[in-house]
Length: 191
Image (cartoon, rainbow, N blue to C red):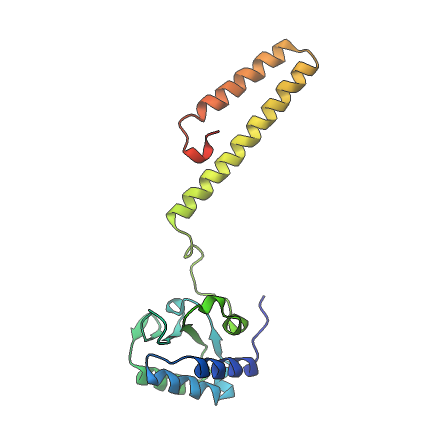
């Protein structure tokens, strides 16, 4: 569980952000200034990533960002009208508001990271690609293969130590079968 971010920390961050970045939409400045001046509202503000998944989210971009200037999401509807968004924020002060700020190197900015919270609405597999899943599966298969091979080699060494020819023949056949079955595997699995 993440510790809640204090209202004072949020205020200081927004003030810092407004002093260091020029926003693509001037209405975004108005919205952020409005948040700074209303503690009860700021108490319900959460800085997150991927606001598009939130029931009530806002995306604000600076001039140095390649992202869209402004987006407001409410119950899977999206608008670029900052005035409508401002009205919604004023009228629904008790509802959580999830704010995503897009600016240069935002993910490496210590001030932003200090107020950033986990987004509980992002789907679990959102950051995984098919390639990631395939690579994870291949890695797991390689680990299992390497373990089986190592165990067989250790058992073969033991059979030699105790001079058990029957055990040696049986284990070398198993090892040969295991290595042969790996011949058609992706490169990650090949030795």
